[in-house]
Length: 313
Image (cartoon, rainbow, N blue to C red; front, side, top):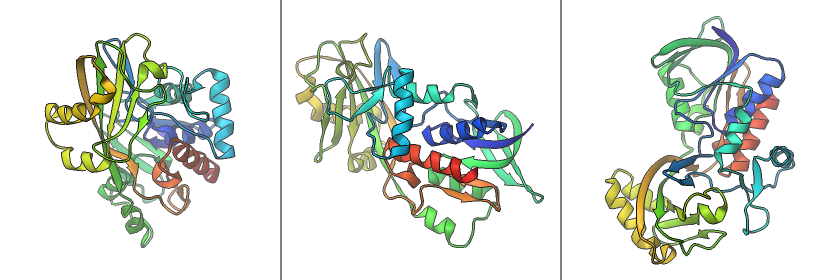
């Protein structure tokens, strides 16, 4: 089947582009390789505990994003962080609630891993999908992390304008290791969480105090520093967990650890951003967007998706 637009990646920026296409009356489908939507707007359940394992909150600076957040608030999917600093926003039942809201009414196909992308000589795109029937479109948007986007295009022999591929390829990413810790008693984590600048940990938050895990006694998200993640990324889970738990002990108090689940973020945040908030190549009907363009925050990904939708229109 042929669509007006295919969006690869159901992260925040990709879903926002898809909404613009849908609102214009265009046929659009979003392909997502994982089981969920939202990318780093990720919420995971471990038993009775609920964790935000990716982005922890977002702030609002850009007027365009402010309008979007006002909509999320009115729909009841976003609230200000309870007992946290003013201006921090979260998903009411976890950060992925925002992505699920954006995906409503859009043809999002989960567990659809794009194997290759090819450009038709006469125009248009052909996408091969692992274990699924291929799809075609007039326009293609890739919102996946830049290394993945460029690899897909290169594998299909899609050439970008001179120098552009090199410029995009120079945008690197920081990794992060996220440890989701269930405790048998209350933690000692302040309600607003703890941001750290030194050591193996970068962030500590209790999702019970945050209000997204009412069924647990403590559900603590630990985010490693980028330096720790680079050094320990491929090491075994028990060893990584032990190192992070040792450093986090002051915030875990006397409670015993019931479980510790590790998630590895290869593309946690871009080290730098592209010079434009998105990339639109009208001669190819190709768009790229995401936090590597708009900036490493949730707001940056959203602004990038909105900017690309506007340029495509």
